[in-house]
Structure formats: structure tokens, C-alpha cells
Length: 315
Image (cartoon, rainbow, N blue to C red):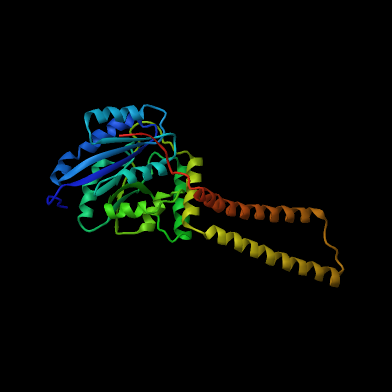
């Protein structure tokens, strides 16, 4: 892709939560692409979004800022989550092109030249997906694949299995994403919902350079619920169908008991079967109420109009 006609700006957004050890390593790895950036006439800005880290992440970024004015820091007042950090970074990115990358080097900066080449072919965004899950617990890999299969069955928004947040986008795509200012954000779904021509690049999983992942199984489970409720209403339909099925079953059972008693003079059996039925029906009712509660909770958070994040310091 030739950008020699005029210089353009590339914004690199880097969400950080307790990534003190990785901040400098990521910066050095990114700058290995400097010859490519110069050849393509690209200016660079690096936006580290400090998501309420409790270690020295902010201080590490400040040291880099002292060496390079292209480095910027946005620190939240507390931990608001990665989705908030992504949104804050996109809001502040001024670039003609915007790259979203993790600080732990699981998103290899060495892929950026290849990603830019696809933008030159007419794509609006270039996204990455893992083809292996090396270093990830098997049970977590199993449920991750199950989640992607489920989402693609119950939602009209396509979410590619193994999709990473590592993505290079044009200004038009970024503006489209920012137009969706909802409080409950599920960026993987938002990427698919806005559409545009996207080129997918597959690569083998890269383990973290330093530290441990901040996402445990429980956090990923809650994150998956956010995705389902944000981009599908099928669970609501399922609860309705379950209710209808149980109504029909109850009506048939009542008819069977009436016939059995009137024509065969066979009284209804004792209370154990009745207790089991009550417990079963009550459990199904609570399950369906829980589904409704998930959607009501999301609507409750939306209507309060709280800010997605609060900034403590920025430069």
C-alpha cells in the first residue's frame, strides 16, 4: 500500500491492566516496524490506556513518554474493564488508521506490515484469529469454542472462532464503532455488527511475554453472557417456548388423570411424584426468570446513563 502522497497517522491503542513488565517490551517490539512506517509515510501515536492498574504501569508509560512524545497515557480512576479501555482508546485515537493491540505481546506487532498490505487492497479492516490455543487450559479452550459455536447459531452477528481484539481499521470503521455508545459493550460483536470488508489473518497462539492473564474462567463466563445478551434475543424466545411446552404437557397430564380416574377408577399415586413435578416446574420457572433478569439488568444499566469510564490523568 503506497501512502507516499501525504503522511498519514497510525494510532496504536493498547489497553493495560497491571502490565508494568510488558509496557516497555511492547514499545520496543512495535518500533521494530519503524522502517516500514517511514517507507509508507506513517506518523505514529501510541495510546496506553491504564485500566486502574495497581502496579507501576502508569509510571512505566510516563518513562516512555519522557523518551518519546508519541507515547500517550490515559489512566482510569479505577478498573472499569477492558471494554471500557478499548472504547476510551478509540475515542482518543486521531489516526487515519487505528490498530488495537494487547500489551502482553500476544498480538505480534510484526504482523502490522502484512495487515497494511490488505488495507491497500481495498479492505476496511484487517482482523486476526488464533488457529491454536497453545498454553491455554483444555477446559477453557473447550468452552471458548462452544461459546463461538453458540453465538453464531443464535445471533445474526458473525463472531469468528478464535478472534482476537488485535485489529487494524480505517477511520471510517472506527467512527462506526464509536457511534455505538452503549454502556454494555461487547466489542467482538460490535466489530461484526458494523460490517465493512474485513480480511482475517490466522496465526498461531503466542504466549504472554510476562505476567499472567487477567481473565479467569468466571470472568470469561460473565463476558460470554454479556455477548449473548448484547447480540441475541434467542434466550428470551427459548424461555417462551419452554413455558409453552410445559403448559401443553400440564394440560395433557390433567386430561390423562381425569380419564384414568373416571374410566379406570385408578386414583392418582402419592405425593413423591407430585413433589418431583413441583420442583421441576419451579426450577424451569426460575431459569426463565433468570433469563429475563439478565436482559432487565442490562437495560437497567443502560437507562442510568452512567459514564463508561472516568479518567484520573491524561497526557
